[in-house]
Structure formats: C-alpha cells, structure tokens
Image (cartoon, rainbow, N blue to C red; front, side, top):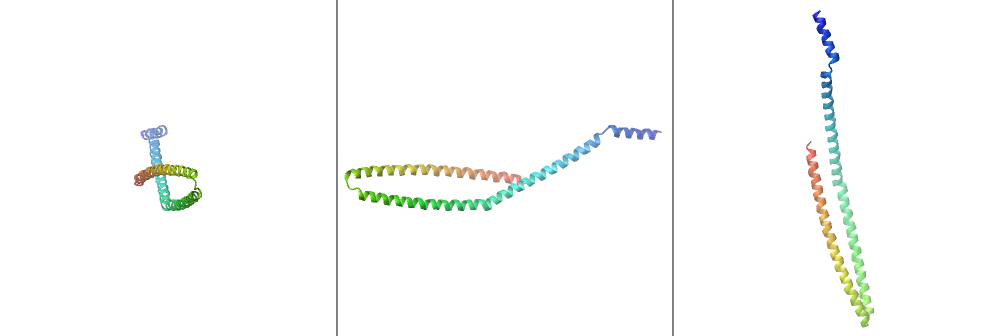
Amino acid sequence: MEKVVKDVGDIQSRLTDHRPILQGEIRYFIREFEEKRAFRECRLLENLNKMTSDTNEHDLPRCTESMHEKLCDALTRLEAANHMAQRIQQRELQVEQNTHLQVCAERRKQDWEEFQREQFRLKEEVDEEHAKAVGRLSAQYNDMKKDLAKYSSF
C-alpha cells in the first residue's frame, strides 16, 4: 500500500510540477538559439570579408585604371585647348596694329592672366579638398579594416 501511495504521489507531482521539464526545454532552446545566432553572424562576417576582398581585387584596380585614363584624356584635351587659345591670341595680336586695339588687347591679356590666376587658385582649392577627401576615405577604410579584423577573430 505504501508503495502505491508513493507511486501515486510521484505521478501526481509529475502531472502538476512541470518545472524540471520546462527548465530542460528552456536550456535546450537557449543553446540552440545561441548556436544558430553564432553561425548566422559568422556567415555574415564571411560574406562581408568576401565582398571586401572582391572589391579590393576587382573594382578598385578597375576604377583606378579608369580614373587614370580619364584624367590623362582630360589633360590632353586641356593642353590642346590651351594651345588653340594661344594660337588664336597670336593671330589677334598680329591683326591688331593700331594703338586702340593694342590697349584693348592688353586689357584682355590682363583679364586673361587674372582669370588664369583665379583658375589656378580654384584648382589648388580643389586639389586640397581632394587630398582631404582621400585622407578621410583612407582613414575610413583603415577603420573598416580594423573593425573587420576585430570580427574575424570570432
């Protein structure tokens, strides 16, 4: 009889007290969640690393080459335009012999020189801004590499 009462008590406690079963299920759920989360984060970091490597290996050299080609082309065109402008100026100076025209030509020459100085000054400003932007981008990519190095250790 005692054994029956004890068995009935065990059955009743199992039917009414679910804590041990729930605690086991909760531990299992947490363990599974943490493993899947770690796997997902690892996969994300691998994808970011691959994307960065692809960009460095393919896009960056292609963009650099394209930029160099375009800048060389622009320089060639600017030199040709400058040469044509100088030839036009020489022709105008040969045609204009009287004093009034020479005074006007001198005034235009001064205006042109002032314009060139202004363009040179603006070019220097643009070059300075470009250098600053390159510095900022280099710093940003260095920071990104450091951040990537931090996450790759996981």
